[in-house]
Length: 354
Image (tube, rainbow, N blue to C red; front, side, top):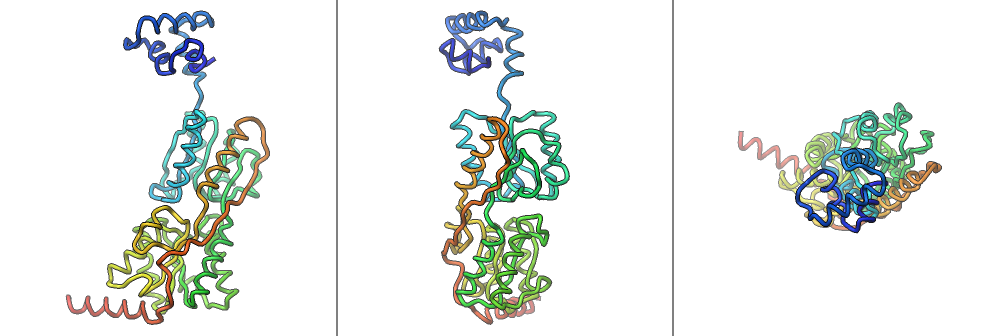
């Protein structure tokens, strides 16, 4: 028996029952008498029953979101919350810093808050491999794969990041680009950015395009500011690039800003392609051509898998969601001297104003 059962039997709302249990005055005498009568008929004294209901009240579904500015996660989270709220499930969302160990945080959260289930929006496989065995509730990892980790209570839903990055390179190649740089993430195959890098590199090799990680790749965090700084470093090293694949839309936003700040344009000076297909990519200037993840599918399948786990023992499943190329405005024909001219103009301007 919980507070919802009492509300249903008494014929009043949950909030009214809660006010009676907590001894609040803003309840009519008729409602108070009816609710106390139902509680008495169920065998509970009002004072002790409040404590009992608090102990038995449904615990929330915990959602851990990696990073505070990931627009893709925001799109997915909105739909996840809507799905759970429609089912009457409480959702507790925690945003973690990009470099946080999400699994260790979740272990502490489990000990103090006792959630009924967990969703991880983003995460590093290394942390899950090392410590997820201490988590006992049903869980789902979203946008990264838990396949091969061997935890019965950890499912995952993601896209094929390697194939998606390769598709992006195919698109740039078809547009005529032969000098393509890559921006964002890390080299670690345990992280999403690392797998995207591997997929892009494989496609470049398949097309016979020369690519050097030391020369043509610049790692960075998934933020606009990081993308803005990173593309400056990349272009000073490789001024012959005609296109850049940013491994996240937010990185592409920052990279585009850096080009315009120096008097260039996209795709006039440099073509820039994003990754994720966030809602903002359709409203940026220019609109970003990007690899679009199906955020509705990612959210819906994650919720479905978690609900299966919450209903009883279930086999861990690892699924792939669809992706496609959203063709918009940020990729054009190659400008062989675009970046070199931009850098030369920036150098001349700096010299004139010294």
